[in-house]
Amino acid sequence: MNLRIQPLSDFLRNKSYFRIKMHAIASNHFKIISKINGVKGVFILDTGASSTFIDISLKDKFKLKSKTSLIEASGAGPNKLTTQLSKNNSIKIGSWRSEKFQILLIDLSNVNNAFASIKTQAVDGIIGADILKTGNGILDYEKRYLYLKY
Image (cartoon, rainbow, N blue to C red; front, top):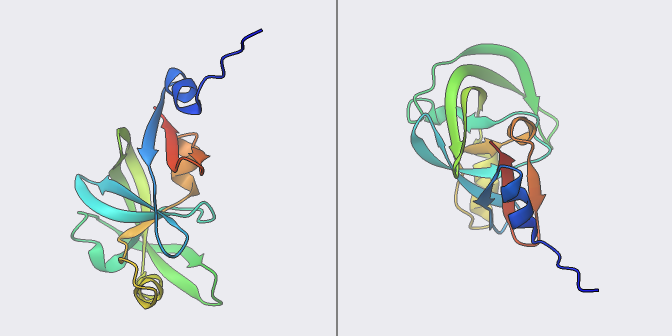
């Protein structure tokens, strides 16, 4: 009996998934190039982040309209971060896209300072679990691909 095992990429393509390349960086995160409102940026994938974030200093670059949010963000440190909420944004990751997407703006200077200390490129933001949930995300760590369903 000769069984042919279908590669994951072929299987998921047949299930209407887009394949997006992830690039490993020195911090052990994966970098993903994405477009927010048509503007290209560098993001890290953080499956533990509940939301997608952009550095508040880049609000104008990404054409974000925001207002103060009641949501407080927290990370690995003890401090809570105030946020601004931006609604109705387009996001494109590879060929996958979503319209009317909500993004939180926070100060990412601590993240980028940590990246600078290990000589890693600064990031514009964080792709969070909200994207993974919306796109039924599947991660292939071995081949370094993110799959999102359209």
